Structure formats: structure tokens, C-alpha cells
Length: 484
Image (tube, rainbow, N blue to C red; front, side):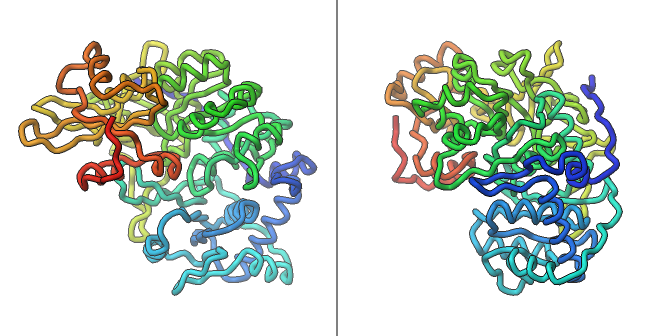
């Protein structure tokens, strides 16, 4: 059975529409600096003129490197208005990796405060100064099916892929989201995720289409403090961020006053969802992907308890089926145009138009999706298939375990055995006590043979911890691992 719904067509560029419909509404704010939709459109159009006068043609690519947040947002919209494919770089990558990526993609220009040798690079201010001296040019005709963005994604494999989206993909993603999480003219969505990530870029489209304000966090404040000071109504978080907020004494009170907290990025621990519901937080648990321009399925505000079991119903503009192997297949108006490889667009759909997510799961009789794991995370122990995410969910139900990640460790007798990395509170049981609790829920071959405390540097450094990083630690015998 296929699960799908439809959204409405778009005729004009969304930023142009917002500037016409809500010219004096705040579009963007950071501290005391704010831009109305009219301001944002005019500044983006000025930058678009600068691109055009430098000979950058529609369909070419412009990379965005190290830029202040407001300059980044204006630059993204400028590229999209000029029909240039915008490519926000993940600036947390090592410099050598970024240079390799630029060599692969070959952008016509890179805007950044950091120079990249052998690539045409200039700062936002330099292009802006050039554009101010030029007569404005009309933007090219808007075609919703034209390519508009290129985003990096590594998925679970660790190999970087470049996903190309159209205007249509981003717009329909935002429209489908708003039918489940209402967003109005007086609302404020905090930019709590990076703009090189689909989660951050999608917030830009949601706020512009709704006429709502996009609020940029200030570095001098914590994100939680920004939510309080800026009267934030909506926020997108990954599990690690929400865990940190709930450890703060004032966190539950601040978060409970919001309209919506969108949770995604990876599996959300059962204990975290339970705690959020106990605090009456307005959570929406989501399942999505870069290839599908963010959310695919999301729980609703009318049925918050559904978050305990899964990721809710498929949103408008998306379709989903479960294959005979249990894999989640998706397609629809939000599915990307393809992967860019050797500067050629590579098809990501199968012959029937479906994208194979590599995730496994099921849909219940109410049409609600539960994701049970990744096909490529599964391993064999003593001839038995082990899905590590299943063990992780059981572990996170044990008091004292905040989050868990299970990976295989090579074993001469069984081939592989599960090993668990845990983020814990001071009340966590010992490894032996944990195994005693697990015996009631798991067969013997699924019981981890060792428990390690997740290294603090990984928790603090990453929003989403990499299984590859943990595998490297396990096989290198890392001295910093602390056994439980």
C-alpha cells in the first residue's frame, strides 16, 4: 500500500511573493539587526545582480563557505533568485576535504571570508560593493522545476554525496510541513541547525512561505536562552540538543511555552520522548532525509503519544511504501533531482520512480510509520541477524541510560558481537546489571559483550554521532574509552 497526499502548485518565487504580501513583516532577525521581507528581497536581488554582472549564468553553481549567518541567508536567496545553484559548504570539514570537494563540484564562484587557493573566491562585502555600482537586472523567469541547491550528505556510509534539489522540492517540503505544524505571520522559527544541512535550509523556506520570522541565535547566548529572549514559537532540534536543554533547570519551563518542537536527524531515544511528554512539550517526531528535502513523516499535535511508537503519518507531497524486504521506499514532489557525480546528474530513483532509503520499518493500520533501523547497520552474530537500533531502543528504556549506540566487534567464534556505547547519568547500572535487565527483552546473541561510556568529546562536538567514529575507536583499542 502507498501512503501519499498532495500539495498546491507555486507560480512565483517564494521570496518575491513574501515581499509583495508581507513587505513590512520581519523576515530575519539577529539580536538588534532585522530585515523585513522587502529588505531581504531587495538585498538578495542586489547580490543576484552582482552574480549576473560577473558572468555567472543560470544553472551554474556558487559555493558558500565561511560567512556570517545574515550574509549566508542573503546569499542563498540571491542565488535562488538568479537561478544559480547554491552550494553551502560544510565548513566543519577539514580544509583539505573542502578543497577536494570544491575540485569535484567546480563552482563558478565561492563566497567566503576564508580564501581557497586555486578557486575563484571573494567575500560577501566585495560582491556587494560591486553590485552597488551596477544597474539592477531583472531576475530570470522563475521555473519551479529548475535546480536551485546542492547539499552534501554522507548518510550512514560516510561517503559524501551531493544532492541536487529544485525549487519545487524545497517549496513542497515546506508546504507539506505547514499542514501538519501550522506557522503564522506572528510566529518565530529559530535557526538552530546549520544552513549546509537540509534541516537548516528547510526552515528558510517554511518561514518565507508563511510570512513568519527567521531568528538567528546570538553567539553570546545559549540556544535555550535565545528561545526565551526572542519569544521563539518553533524550533528544530536533534535528540542531542533536546537532551542538553532538559538537563538545564529552566529548560522544561521554557520549552513548554512553545508551539512546536520538531525532532529529527536520527532515532530519538524512547526515554527522551517519554520525558518530553511528561513535561507537556509540544514535540513532533519526524523521519526525513536530505534526498526528500527534510521531513517525510511527522507526528501531529493532536496525537502526541504517537511519538512513543514512531514518526507519524506521511506528509503532503510525499509517497511511501514498504518493500518486501522491509525497506522504506519514497517518492513525490519533494524527492531530489539526483546526485551530482563528476559534474553529471545521476538518477537516484529506481525504474518505478522510488528512492530506496536504506532504512527499514513498517506502517501500522493508522498509517503511522515506525523506523526500526538501517539495512547497512545490520550485522550477523553466530548466524543470526542483529539490528543494532533494536538493542539501542531497549537500552534507552533503562533508567540512567540517556542514549545508546550499538556496533559490531569482530569475534573469532561468532563473526561479530554487539558492543554498546552509552551516554549515561550518575545513576547508570554496571554493565553486568544492564545485561541482567536486557535478558527479559533480548535473546542472548543480542546482548552486548561490553559497555563503554560515550566519549564526552563526541557528545559535545557532534549533533549526530557517527557509527564510523565509534567503529574506529573500537578497532583501534582507544585508551580513552571508559568501561561500565
